[in-house]
Amino acid sequence: MDFTEIKINIDTKDVDTACAIAHMTVPYGIYIEDYSDLEQGVLEIANINLIDEELTAKNRETAIIHIYIDIKENQNEAVSFLNERLKACDIEYTIDKGTVKEEDWENGWKQYFKPTEIGEKILILPSWEKEPLTERKILKIDPGASFGTGTHATTKICMETLEKYIKGGETVLDIGTGSGILSIASLLLGAKTVTGVDIDGTAVRVAIENGSKNGYTAPQYNIIKRNLTTEIVEKFDICIANIVADVIFVLIENIKEYMNDNGIFIMSGIIENREDEVTTALSENGLTIIDRKESEGWVCLAAIDN
Image (cartoon, rainbow, N blue to C red):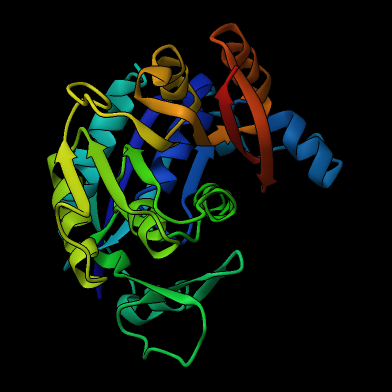
């Protein structure tokens, strides 16, 4: 069976941020070509100095991120998402697409996405799985048509943080909603209403479809295309941003405009080595960190107005 290979060509300095964005398009991992520290890496892993000439000839200043998508799905959705996110982070890039054959790709695809328990209350269920008997809230989602499935560490720790702070009846703003998974989870956990915003029109459509699968529609579940928080005039009890650190920096400057008194700003998608930059920005803008979760090198922070 065929599937589409999407290759993102970037400068090696942008690998971490671009990988965080790429991870949001698929639930099962990505393949990265980055030869910038080839000699050191080989020495640490294999304790040898001899390296194949073909490898030493690789470009050390650029990296390639490979993403694989079932050819029956609309790969343009993922490409559109990548374009919007990479541009928002001011990353210079090019994208190439090709077709790759893989035996039984669809069934192999599914082996990476099984029912997943998140925190104490949520069960993420692939569309092809039978609903189990469980006391958990079931969140249905189809990874073949979405930009996020909840299995990535950034989404998991964000959802676990939401579980801690949603007590019932809250209003939630989900900035960069993607597949809508955090918006849907918020309602399942007891939020009164959710407004999800995204700069990508395809993401908005997919988020609306996923909401409908779980029984949520406007005005309780309101998904709109906006440039992040532009044109949003309401204030919310909880604001979520599971994006990347560079975008979070921009949000920190004016997020208090969208927070009710005693409101909470939950931000995830922060690579561990950039946490100090984020915490400094929060402090400089009058926000105090009240919670922190970490998983697989990713950090989620929760902050309140001083």
